[in-house]
Image (cartoon, rainbow, N blue to C red; front, side, top):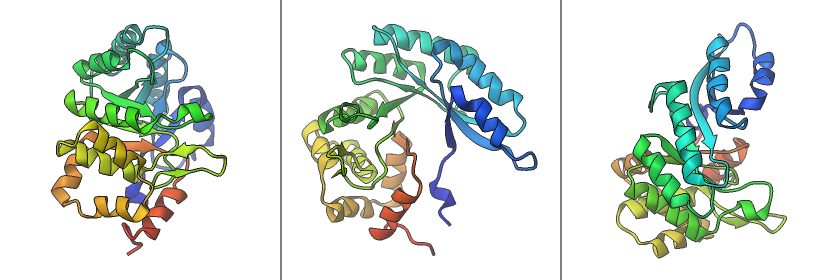
Amino acid sequence: WYARLVGPFVCPASRLDELSARLDLGSDPFGVTVVVDTGVGGIGPAVDVVAAEDRMVLRGIEVPLRGESLTDSATRSLTALDAALGGPDDEEPAYVEVPRRPGWREALEIVADSGYRAKLRTGGATPEDFPPEDHVAAFILACLDLDTPFKFTAGLHRAVRHTSSDGVEQHGFLNALAAVALAINGADAAEVARVVADRDSVAVADLVRVLSVGEAARVRRWFTSYGSCSIAEPVDDLLALGLVSKE
């Protein structure tokens, strides 16, 4: 019943062979977004692997920037994406993950000029992988200023900002939606950061609940999706907050 809430399966390029081995021969083509964890040189080969597999169809590609200079890495990655995909494509969107490091804004501008989309990592294996709310707000506002659609990835299992059992501050995907809505309507960085950090589940849910269909569409025009290794947790939170129903 919640199928429409779930996007394509996300798989590292280094595990595409493993995924292929697990697909049923008689099933419909399996949509997959590939995270290129094999370096810039792995972008083309990853696209080729999916293209050569009748049981898979490419739904997107994500490339993290690496190296000392983020601007140089962005230029190399975009050139490789152009060679592999032929340019930006809404049917097979490519996202460039911009790390939270000095020079991130300049790298984001290069991504924006290319027509590809941006990605921010909002969690990970260590507490340092979870960016503070002021950086999340700065990233949202920068993407809107640059007319660049974006997604978030990691750490967004739950709807609302909370502290995990191991003491890590984790962001909420409803906080992100509400923050983008406010940013679109002209909120400043401090207000956007405040909503990103809001731990009141009822208040955050209400910010989303009051959005009109048109407002929600504008939010999703820019904040396109987020990656999560859980489906049950986000759906359960939405059910508990009364934002979706099985009917």
